[in-house]
Length: 107
Image (tube, rainbow, N blue to C red; front, side, top):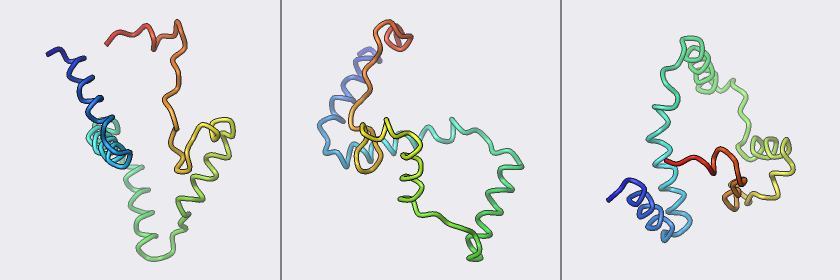
């Protein structure tokens, strides 16, 4: 079986799952890519993250609720907000533009 047909079969099987399980599957797959995509942390970023964790542990770091962060992010792109659900996720896959590099690409 060719790779494309194996992927198509997996996508078809995933599409039959309930939405919550599809989301969980998508997050699990994304987690497997996270380490590869990010690479090692720079010493500066690692130090900043450690500083922030220490502040949070000590109760002195400023935290912002996720709902506030999401609302502020969506407010920056108001035209995109109408195409998103209540959780900020896209309601549909964007259409490909005819003649675009994405539509010409053959995997």
